[in-house]
Image (tube, rainbow, N blue to C red):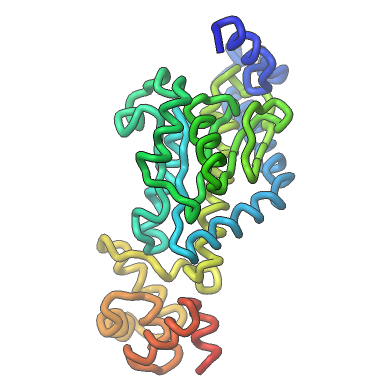
Length: 305
C-alpha cells in the first residue's frame, strides 16, 4: 500500500475520526477531562456485549485446542501486541498452565514491549514468517489483535495461518465491513472515535483487554481450572500465592490455617488435589486418581465419591 492509499484508508477508519463529544477537551478542567474519558469508557462494555455469541464460539475453539495439546498464540503491534503479551503472561500464575500454552508476540519483538517501535508493524512478510518461526500447527489457534484492523504484521500471520489450515480469531475495534482480511472468528467491537483522535490505547485498548480476558478465562473455566468461582489451579510461585492457596483450602474445607497448611503440604503444593483430599476425605493417591478420571474438574471428582 502506497502513502496515498494509506492516507485514504486511515481517513475511513472509525478509530481515526474525531469524537464530537470531546472537541473542547483541551479547554477542560482536570475533573471534566476525567468525566469525559469515563463517559466514553462506559460505552465500551455495551459494545462488547453485542459480540458475546462469537466470543463464546472462540472460547470453545480455544478450549478444544487445549484439550488436544494445542496453544493459543496472540499476535499484535503496539498497544494491541502488548495486551496479548500481558494476557499470556498472566495465565501461568493464575491457572497453573505451562508458559508455552498461551503466548503473546508483538511486532518488533521483546524490545517493543517497553519502547514503541511502530515501524515494525508494517511488514506483512514478517507476520507470515512467524508461523514457521513459532512452529505453529493445525493444533494451535492464532488470535490476531489490531484496533484499526489493518496492521500488516497481523494480516500476514492471519493469511499464512489460514492458508495452512490453522484456526484464526481476529479481535478489532472497527466494523467488520472496514476489514481487508478474514478470519474464522471475527470479534469486531466498533467503539467509535477515541477521546483523542487515533489514540487506540484508550477505548480500543479497553475493549481488547476485556475480550482477551474473556477468551483465556472462559477457556480455562472450560478446562476445569476453576471451582465454583475460585481459581484453584494457581501456581505457587510466591508467598502471596501460597497463602492464597491455604485460604482457598480453608474456605472450601471449613478448616483452620494449620490444617489447610497440612493439606497443601500433603498434596505437594497442588491446590486441586488438596481440595479433593480435604473435602472428599481422601488421601493423596485417591485424590489424584479422582482428578485424573474427571479431567481435572473438582466438582466431577467430588460427585464420584
